[in-house]
Image (cartoon, rainbow, N blue to C red; front, side, top):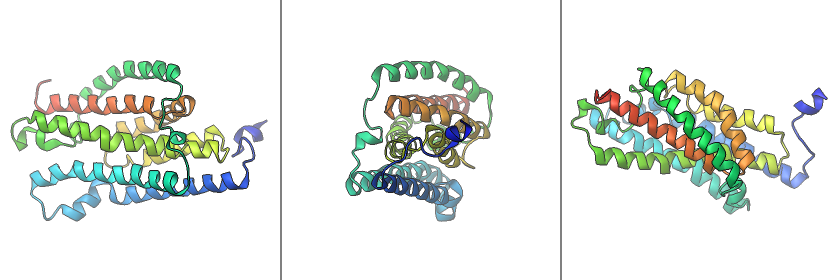
Length: 254
């Protein structure tokens, strides 16, 4: 019984599907490693730290990171999987899936966001990291620019959160389950490991620990609903609330 529960495969996949699942696994691992090499602020500093003014440095930083996430987490896996390997995008979670279950779980997640707000407000390390569009909200860069802030928050959702969920919860999970017949336990451990790894160094410690804990929940919800959209809504809402609370702290409104 123990051997059955800890076995890698739930069923034996055929050779063609297994080969496809292996390719998806290797590509997701490769993309994660590349992002960990070029997506953190230390690498960005090496590229631009000596050539940009402080304002330029902090203005370009979120644009750099969002663009990198869009390319690595969305366009590359989408192009390779859907255009080259013939996987339909809905098979990667890009669909409504189980709407009833998804809405119930989204409502539960939305209620938990209240706790996120209190946690961020009580942790002084968060305003040191967020919002990434610091030039629009930090008083040392001038007056609060509400237009710039709103535009960057929209880009945050479109260019970071959508690619992030597509890659880590869709692309990196569904082919392993459907084609590779890998057990759910191992898929969740893998997707949580790589999604937590890309938080390393550039976020507060509480956020990284939260990513480790909530990664399993987000991964399971995605697999159960057969959709990335419900987790995406909650995840993006957490990010927006975090940024807003940090904005209030930086402006000394709370």
